[in-house]
Amino acid sequence: MSSQEHPLGISFEFFPPATDVGRGKLLQARDALATRQPRFFSVTYGAGGSTQERTRAAVRAVGERGITTAPHLSCIGSEKAQLRDLLAQYREEGIDSLVALRGDMPSGMASLGELRYGNELVEFIRDETGDHFDIAVAAYPESHPQAPNLDRDVENFARKMHAGANMAITQYFFTADAYFRFVDKARALGVEKPIIPGIMPIINYTKLARFSDACGAEIPRWIRKQLESYGDDSDAISQFGTEVVTNLCQRLLDGGAPGLHFYTLNQSTPVLKIVDNLTD
Ligand code: FAD
Image (cartoon, rainbow, N blue to C red; front, side):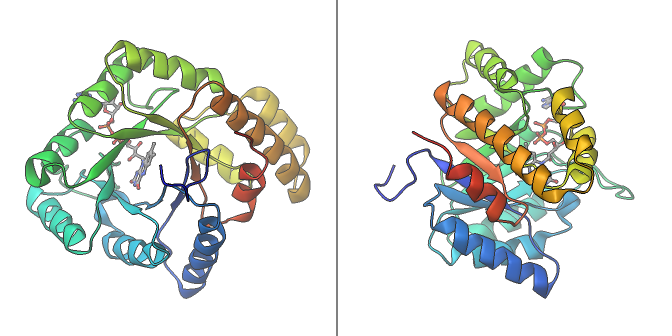
């Protein structure tokens, strides 16, 4: 860790904006979050490569602050030749970190592509580029929605790590014990690399509930009920959300989590309220 790095080992994720207004917001968020000396930034990638050019542009823009910036890359719906080209472009642009994902099949896409699972993508990247890239993969403390059960999902996760990933970032969750249980199960399967909790600030309850249903993240009943009781009162939601997520982060860090990765939604304020509350 460089002496410049935030002592808690934090990182921030952005999505590639589609409009000029969105680009302005991204740069504002980048500048505000860069002041907290993150380990790295990352930029998501649209299903089936739909944001390939926007992701590349956002990676360039975010990387202007000199902080390592990792593009996300998914394999579903892509041929190996396309992935090979993209990896070569990233190398030429000086990128040395990636978040490697299977991704989800977009509706209307005809072919699944040549690589079926995250572990196959990690193997492919290692075969093609050796040790050039630091590779992060996704982990699901509450189980991936398509997995038959948590144990099977952890086995598949371990396969991905053993294929050569350097670290994992989790789906977000609001129950710290789910994370600790997952880490114990992964360690029992020989996974030694860091598993960084992914943290979602609570900003907009309706959107959060919809997204959580889709990705299989559980919002505990007591949190749902409290958020529902605030209706449209965004200040109350933000205040309660900050408290809940700050407590979650502190519990994770106190329990040994090796850092925190924030899903920023391209907004700095909610994330900074949490980060600045945490102690070493
Ligand atoms: P995998 O690891 O392949 O797992 C998918 C499912 O297949 C799981 O149920 C797993 O148990 C099972 N499985 C895995 N390997 C095998 C195997 N060898 N044999 C049989 N079954 C297997 N999506 C995007 O589109 N763009 C993004 O930028 C993006 N970023 C993300 C970042 C993070 C940190 C996280 C947690 C998720 C992200 N996602 C993103 C969502 C992700 O693409 C989806 O959750 C997707 O459904 C699974 O991707 P994966 O790489 O985890 O898949």
